Length: 310
Ligand SMILES: *Cc1c(COP(=O)(O)O)cnc(C)c1O
Image 1: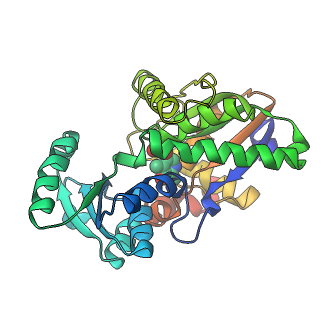
Image 2 (image 1 turned 180 degrees about the vertical axis):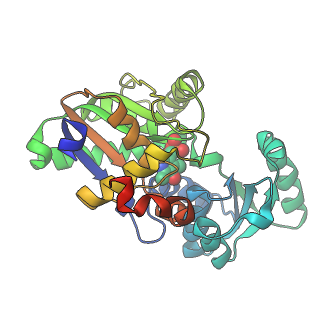
């Protein structure tokens, strides 16, 4: 990894935060579902793409807590969606309602309609935003940075804080929590959210808003560290990796044993690779996403051959 990226890289293994629910979403859900339980909810509603890691983690945690889970999933053609995260959501018996990308854009309105529908049936719904990204969910990454601080205090990574903390960015909650947490617990100088769907302008505004929300909830925390959204990770489209991105994540597996995915973590680390030379000490948060990889084995298969130089 260090020789591949030409600097000292440590990996925060948030792909190991749990069993099947592992990834960055479970850190947000720790706070969000505690609120749902506290409010006496009996059904949790959230939304995402057809291969949403967030939907899968939510569905698992809901079952563990004895809650129903209703998912608004986005697809142009639900009949073509299968495997990976979707299979797990189906296996958990989550109620899935398909929405078109156009309907999805105003999912706030769909939430309002659903709230009326569910309450009319005597249910007590709790609504979680896309990716679990609001101020409350972002607290999960403030706590993650606290965890990194105590690892450093125990001598991990040589004990010194990082020049830069990088991770895949899709809805901004991880970035906001990391930026506030890195400042509050002195673990890193800057945060590099590696964009996988929207551009820098979109995310910098969104992350700044989320940071404000975090500080409104916990006024004792410090103002966020500088956030520098990177676009080198973008690729052709959300959920679609380029040939070099696909090749890269196979090379990483070969050389380090680290399994990245083509939607988030693989694009993020490839983006860092493209941005060399990097700061001296980098912390890369591995945000999980294994089921998303398993839903794209057909696309990745051709890159396994030695001809592609892995
Ligand atoms: C959701 C997700 C991200 C992005 O995190 P956000 O907080 O939504 O920006 C990154 N990696 C994986 C694997 C994810 O599932």
